[in-house]
Image (tube, rainbow, N blue to C red; front, side, top):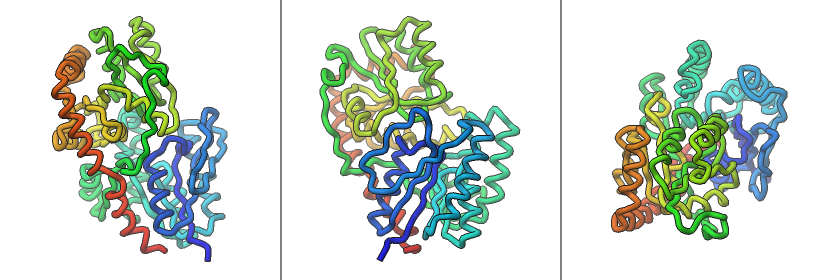
Amino acid sequence: MQRPLAVLSVTNDLSTDRRVDKVARSLIKLGYRVTLVGRRRNDSLALENKPYECERLLLLFDKGPLFYAEFNIRLFFYLLRQKARVFVANDLDTLTANFLASRLKATALVYDSHELFTEVPELTGRKGVQQFWKKLEGLIFPRLEWIFTVNHSIADIYRQKYHKEIRVVRNLPERSTQLQPASREELGLPLDKPILILQGAGINIDRGAEEAILAMQYLKGTLLLIIGGGDMIDKLKELTSNLELGNSIRFLPKMPYEKLLQYTRCADIGLTLDKDSSLNYRFSLPNKLFDYIIAGIPVLASPLPEVSKVVNQYQIGMLIHNHEPEHIAKIVEIMLVDKNQMEKWKENLNIAASELCWEEEEKNLADVYSRFL
């Protein structure tokens, strides 16, 4: 007897979305067949050794209103052709197609909100566009029954706004994640310098990357690795060149997760410096924080509520008080000089890694998805 099908959709290219990958694997464990639907881009990485099917839609438009419209139209007709037991819309930009298809086909719909979509910095400065997404959310959200999000702060906001039951599944790494060790020498990294790392698929505006680069003016003999993609990468490279910091800052493109963790593990400090510039960032819980934890490197973080809660509870690093580059550099120096404290942080990181794991979070998924089997 064939397993029931779950179709998960996202607007990214499927190559770096760890949350969707983990949800898919959890659904397979529950007894589903799974298909992931995303987009194909010119620089999309190959998808290998996945236990689920992948479908990348080739689109005419790459961004802006026409992209979102085209993607949802294409996704809608794709979903209509699927004999699925459940559709899973990841974030507001896939919800329209999923909602309409689920109603027409009488298919269960689960909404997984990875952030406060209507409050992302890319929208807060564009009131007309922001109002469009808010109206769209306000139209569909009250009609949803099964809703997940990534932390309790965001869940509380949705509960107060829509009076709906919101389930929380944090985007934690698997306890079983296998770290394939690689030495600095094998990765072409210096052996005689402390290394800072800032990583992520969305290195965008107000993520603190500019300030991290500016701080490197005061951190001689230290290397900053910036790994991943995002809207700010070209500007960050230009800033690095203008400051003549090419020997202190190295950019690497997005890469498979296992390869990324090799670099992470070779760093001395992981940076997560998102600014409190929007509600979305204020209540965010960045994936990179947990990547640093599983890699066993102390964290330097901005004092956002969800982030500081983890850093303080497990005592795994320090918080900055502001985003002044000199202040960031000073805290980095304090962390690097205190070898005893670094060892204590690393001991605490082992505890945090054992407790903050996907295997515990996915139990909340089973409570919902088992209903549709």
